[in-house]
Image 1 (cartoon, helix red, strand yellow):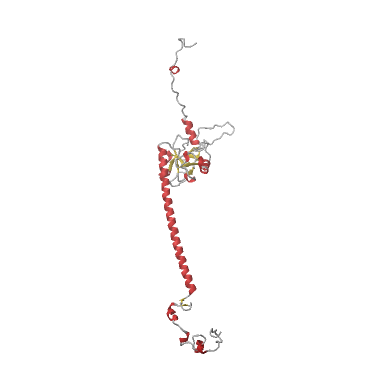
Image 2: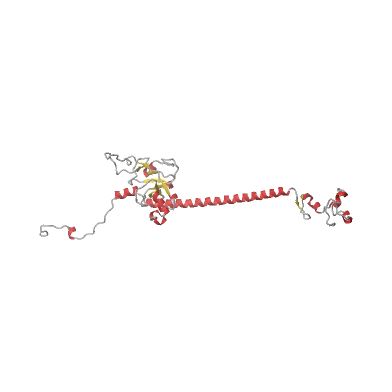
Length: 288
C-alpha cells in the first residue's frame, strides 16, 4: 500500500522547494526579434526600415504610429517622422527564399531571409549586423571591420564611423547608438539654424537691393517726367536750374529782344492801362 517499509521517499517529496520559473528559449527569442517588427510584433513586411537606435520595423507600422500618436509604444517615442527611419537595403538569401512547390523539396526553415553581401553570413541574430545611415545598406559587422573602406561596399556611397548603426543592439551597443543619435540630432539642429540664418541674411540683402533699385528707378522716372527743369515758385512752370534765378525775376515787358507788338499782348504792357476795349487776341479781364 506504500510507506510500509519497502518504499524510500525522495527529498523533493518530503520537502517543499521553490519551483523554478519558466525559462525562455533563447533561440526562439532571437529568431522572433530578427524576423518581426519591433512595434507591431508581426512578421516583417517590405519595405523594412530601421531607426537610429537599430530597431527594425515594417514601414507600414511606423506610418500607423505616426498617424495615431496615441498608440505609439514607448520603444518608438524617439521616432518623430519618416526622417528618423531609414529604408534598409537588404541582400536576399537564396537558401532562405526556396519554397517547396510540390512538397518534395527540402525547405530549410532555420535559414535566415537575408545575408551579408560581402562575407555571406546569415542575418539571424547569431552574428552582429550593422547598416549605414547614409545609404541604408546592411552588412555584417565582420565585413565592415575586415574590409576597410570609406565608401559603401554595395552602392559606393561615402560614410563615416558615425553612420554605422548596429541592428537590434543590446547593453553597451544600445547605449552607444543612443549617444550617436543624440549627437547626430544636435548637429542637425545646428546646421538647420545656420541655414536659416544664412537664408534670412540673403532675404534681407535681396530686399535691400530691391528697395535700392526701386528707389533708383523712381528717381530716373521722375527725371524723365520732369525733363531738364525744376519747379518755379512764381507760376508753377518748370525751368532748367541754370536759368532758375533769372527766371524768377524775368518779365516780358522788360525783355529788349521782344517787339512792342508782342509785348502788347500781355496785361503787363503799358498800353493795357489805356486800352478801352479787349485785345483781339488775348482775353483781358479788365474789359468784361
